[in-house]
Amino acid sequence: MTALAFVIGIVLVLVGLAVSIALHEIGHLLPAKLFGVRVGQYMIGFGPTLFSRRKGETEYGIKAIPLGGYISMAGMYPPSPRDAARGGRAGGGFFATMVQDARAANDETLDGDGDTRVFYRLPVYKRVIVMLGGPVMNLLLAIVLFAIAFSGIGVQTATTTIAQVSACVPAAGATSCAAADPASPARTAGVRPGDRIVSVDGTATSTFGEASAVIQRSAGRSIPVVVDRDGHALTLQLTPAARTVDGAEVGFAGITSRVDYVRQPLWSGPVAAFQNVGAVAEIIVQLPQKLYGVVQSTVTGGQRDPNSPLSPVGVGVLAGEAASSAAPVLDRVAFLLVLLGSLNVSLFVFNLVPLLPLDGGHVVVALWDGVKRAWSRIFRRPPPKPVDATRLVPVTFVVVVLLIAMGAVLILADVINPITLLGR
Image 1 (cartoon, rainbow, N blue to C red):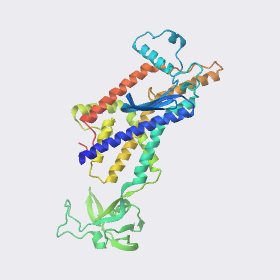
Image 2 (cartoon, one colour):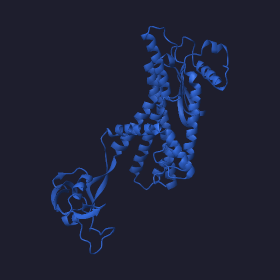
Image 3 (cartoon, one colour):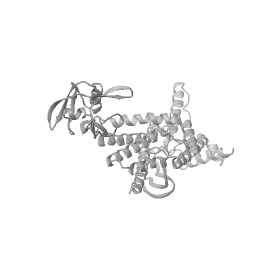
Image 4 (cartoon, rainbow, N blue to C red):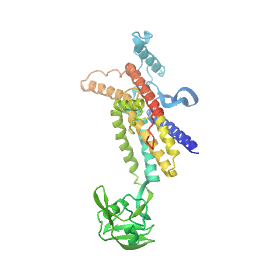
């Protein structure tokens, strides 16, 4: 049963990842179609096509390798220069050939020089909206997932309702009562399980932490405790016993709170999402250092930094552990929701990195085109040619190679030296 739950956890995360990718691409697709761009394909995954269906001018499908997705928009880049088109394959070696191949593939999406339904002809702000649509969709999904976890299910919180009353004040280091141990202050005061603490020493308490703070600073002093018992307010006199903790004297009552799911305000979802954005951005800024730490811990077998980046394999391991744990079902569901929310935040932040082929790279190209056009208008010069991003194909190639290498390192680390819920 545990093994089955582990597999179910992994499957749920894979499905969640697929949905996240699908919504990311929809975030690009919808504004592109809204702005009139011709979209040839909407695909989830890479490699051979497993299933596809054409609706209108767009082919929708699923490919064999579910590690990403894309939409194919007409005219992502301007047409090839006429001299390049006449000259066939560009000379100059591997990268020049790559540039020419990229231009040829882009030209195939164009419907003549007068084609207006192309991406590169859109105003700058529309191009930015199209490219940011995917990451923003991931951020919105993360907010929804966090909101369900925190505001729908709630956060386990120690409430002011009493779960247990200790029978005694145990001796230092003891875990059970001996015959000579005095009765606990709470039992002597008449506190019962099920009582809800209303106030302690005249201070209204809404959390168990607030009640504990007053009790701890009242060692040896009789204080009034107001409790709600079956709808009736009772005032009890409690004299906390003095105990030494870390060299300081604190009051001890001998009560344990009931832990319940407490639903958080609706804004908790957005707050959690943006807090995760900051955390993920910090990891990306420190990515070379983090990757070095991952490699080092994997090679030496040392403790891996719990804040190091994960591959989908590592996320699956965490999901499997959570699903197969002995925690209450709601705890496991909440953890999986938060895990998927964090995954979507990672997709949001990572895609904003200003490098092609990531969405942030396309945004930078669009903004640079806008800067050039604004510069020409200011100085009354002829409109410049659209920015030809195919010239950056060699840079894109290097980035892709680095991403593949990083993915391979993380997958290997997540298999050999995974981050687990229980540590190592």
